[in-house]
Image 1 (tube, rainbow, N blue to C red):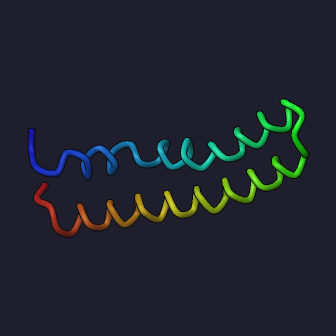
Image 2: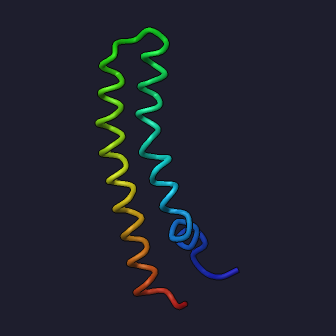
Length: 73
């Protein structure tokens, strides 16, 4: 199987995972607004989605850099 299966998984599938993780707060805000909460939940969800996407994407980039430089091919 190989060493570091989680790093390999995140290296391979990190692009779409960061999109899913980033979209989660926006979807939650839309659901909250649809259930009758303040529309500010959508705005807060959009801001949180952007920040979370950038954090997740940078984490994936660090993993790709680390696996490229340090792990055997």
